[in-house]
Structure formats: C-alpha cells, structure tokens
Length: 217
Image 1 (cartoon, one colour):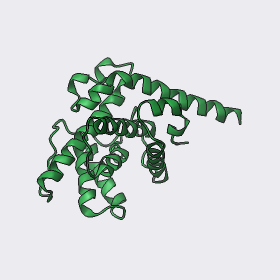
Image 2 (cartoon, rainbow, N blue to C red):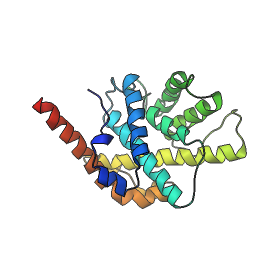
Image 3 (cartoon, rainbow, N blue to C red):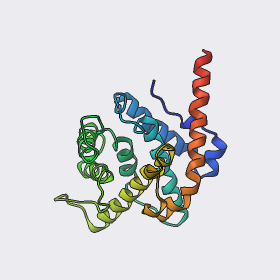
Image 4 (cartoon, rainbow, N blue to C red):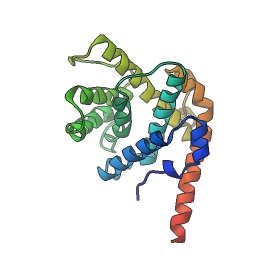
C-alpha cells in the first residue's frame, strides 16, 4: 500500500536540515494527494515510484530553504512542488523516457485545471516537460509570461532537475546512473549533495520502521 513516510522520519534530523513542521505537513499532504489520485500505483518503472516522488519533494524543499538562507526567495513556489508531485506520472513501459515529460504534463494539466489558474498550470506543465529534456532551458513556446515570470520559472525548473538528480544517489548498482554533482545547476543543490546520502538512509530507516510495525499487527 502506498503511503507517505516523511512523518515517520527523525524529526530532529529534519529540523537540523531546515525543515519546519509546516513544510513537513505540506509534503505529507501532497504525497497523499498523489495516493488519492493513484498517480503511481500502476508504475512498473524501477526507481520511479511514490517514494521517489516524496524524496524529490523533500529535496525541492531543502534546496528552496537553502536559497532563502542565501537571501533568494522565489515566487510561485507551488509551481515547483506540484510539478515535482506529477513529474514522473507519465512514465510507463509504453512511454519512452524522452516522452514521459510530455505525457506527464498532459496528465497534470487535466488533474490541476480546477486547482490553479491557467497560467500556473502552464508553468507546472513546462517544468514537467523540461525535467525530462536534455535541454535545461525552458521552452516557453507561445505561452505569455513576463520576463520576471520566465526567469522565476527557469530557476524553479533548475531546482526540480537538481532535486530529481539528487535522488539518483539511491541507485547503488549502476554508478553511471548516480548523481554527478558537476552537472547540478544550482549552488544550493551542490551544497547539500554530500548530505543526500544521509537523507536517503534516514528515509529508508523510516520505511523500515513502518514495515516492522505493520508486520507486528
């Protein structure tokens, strides 16, 4: 059964890396939205399940917290978190790696049309499409955004790509698939890169403890 594990993590550890109770609750709610919508329940693609999504959400939050510490506060942060929630929902055995961002963006567009206004939905879709592209620059197509909005969306896109990349360090079997810090786009992601292994181990501890409790029932 799918579930969120962030509330089962060591709260003192999460606090030490800058997570507030409000941020933990926000990630918990997003993951449970994904469960309710069954976004990943039928996923058969290795390493891209709901646990991956929750960790990417955490890395997004962590990077943003680092940006605030560096004095940079971004607008429309919901665009980032909802794109992180939906970013791999287009993956399937029938969809190529190149196309899953486009498919995922279409799914997100339909799911979010009653949650956000048209412009924010477009921003979310752009981030989902770009995360699966080898090109880092967002293609704004014919969408109408101001210069400031475009700059903001590009930064958020970089954060999503970095958060997704940081979670590749969980792949121990294939070293070529692991995160290469030289390719990270934000200095904040580079700052937390060496700590990402510890975060993953703490997350794994939480999932293990939950399984032990469930087995005792």
